[in-house]
Length: 130
Image (cartoon, rainbow, N blue to C red; front, side, top):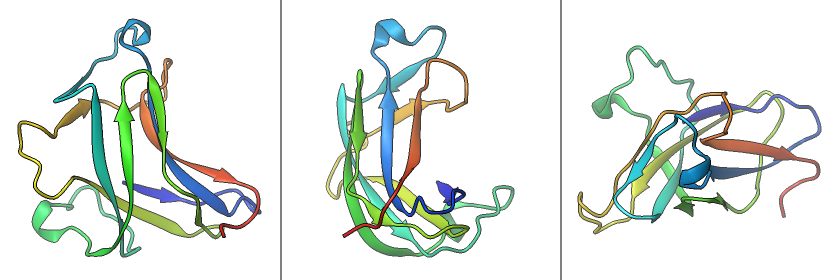
């Protein structure tokens, strides 16, 4: 996923998963191998992604393992804060933990702007990460 930092002065960011409880999903669907999934969040090189030509073989290189994000139905998961300057691109890869089997690690949902919110988003906050 790639995010552009828009708001001037809100240069302390975090990644959050927003997954409503199943009885509050409305007509949206969320399926996963487990009720709670731990995924690795990798910070990638910050080249702008080209969605029409992006492929697994041509994905950006991993810069570093940034965090592990707990994705749980009915809860918000969040990463530690990180610095994010105005107009900069932040690019992340979400991956199964090393050693996880395909049967133990998969998540499937469609992200959109409709209500209820079902998403993985970058949130901007005032101040700087320490």
